[in-house]
Amino acid sequence: MERLKPLDAMFIDAEDKDPDTSMAIASVAVFEGPVPSHDEFLAYLAGRLPLVPRYRQKLRPVPFHLGLPAWVDDSDFDLSYHVRRVALPEPGGDQQLAELVARVMSERLNRDHPLWEYWVIERLANDRWALISKVHHCMVDGISGTDLYRVIFDYSPEPAPPVAEDRTVGAAPSAASLAARAAVDDMFKLPLRGASALAGAVAQFDRTVGQAADIMQAIAKLGEYLRPATSASLSGRIGRQRRYTFTRASLDDIKTIKQNLGGTVNDVVLAAISGGFRALLLARGEQPGPRSVPSLVPFSLRAPGEESVYENRVSAMVAYLPVHIADPAERLAAVRAELESLKASKETMIGEALAALGNYAFYPLVSWSVRQAFWLPQREIVTVTTNVRGPGEPLFGMGRRIEEILPYVPIASKVRTGVSIFSYCGNVTFGVTGDFDANPDLDVLAHGIEQGVAELLQAATPPKAVPSGKKATHPRKKAAAAAKKAGSAPKKAGSALTKAA
Image (cartoon, rainbow, N blue to C red; front, side):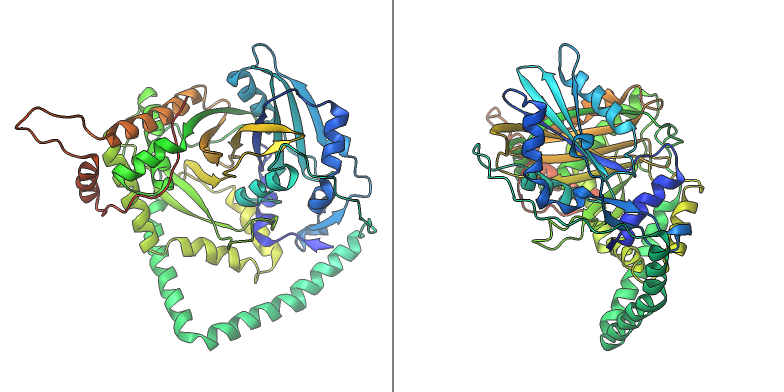
């Protein structure tokens, strides 16, 4: 029996507190070729399940929240329960697919079963089909969720042989044994972990003092972000139903933007998203300001090779998206300046420290704190923007090539929108999640992101020849001037990302 990690348990606590929140993450793989029959897909998936033991385990809560929930074998596991099948209405295009994803993701996963579902989608346009992979956030983060694609699917049209079944289902623990186990862990093992951590801190006293100073500096910087956001419509209570839409982009276009304007993949993506939110605010009659859109920006804490560890290993920082800047090159420079300032302030260490604190604090106290947080006013974060790098080579399922992968990020509390970015095989998709009632115009945000990429690409395009006697200014020089104005020195160009269809 394995207990849930403290950070993973926070997603369960957040869902428990808010009846309108579903903390499932998802992605949609669009396949070329004919859709497999129901039996064919079940047989294929059954041959891969031994590679993901968590898919056959469910959560058992500890009575009275005395300890972390436990993963236990599902003795009644039924694969057919987890695989659903539905067909799109005509014409089976992007809009119909997006509407289906929104309906599927509006419903919570049933905790009486392992926390995942696969939805086989028939009748996509151009003789295609799709698969919605819906998994609770307590099981995976974006990186480990991506690794599931590498496990379930193949890098070749020739399917790998099925994995032999070698599974012994253990007896389900009783409520009393779960409570006793929690007591042992919290009364004996927890103090030992704390004592070990304290001994390590004393042994490396100078390093510990330095880290403490960095965290205090970060907390001081973070105080600037605790003021309410100035947008009137982006924050507020959410309901149970969701809207979803998406747009596409090209890695080659982002490569051009990076090479000529500087920055990183994440800088370019956030600049494009900033353009999208600017368009949304203007369409709603709101004037974009420098503090209109503070965004939670998650980042991975995984070391290389830890992608297949199916739990959450993430932290986050809060960044103001420069929606008040009209010029795309200046907007990118402002994003770079903001993120470099956050990194210099060591703000990223706060999330890491809080995540680590869960390993040394009593779970009832941590759980209570998370639950109470949902009662507090929340205006300082209005969106989440998360970027995950997917496979660079094509994947196949049952011999069918995956054409594209669309990401979905959940929203909660008073955060009414979220944007997830996923790169796969030379392309990037932006998945946009919104509360149903608060975002009837969600497509404005998606089109704005698309336009944001196009504007950046235009700004990054080298100038054409000019008449004799005049001197053209190269985009990189323009970017350098914009970066200087924003308080950031341009970096060297790196790799790639986006353009919408």
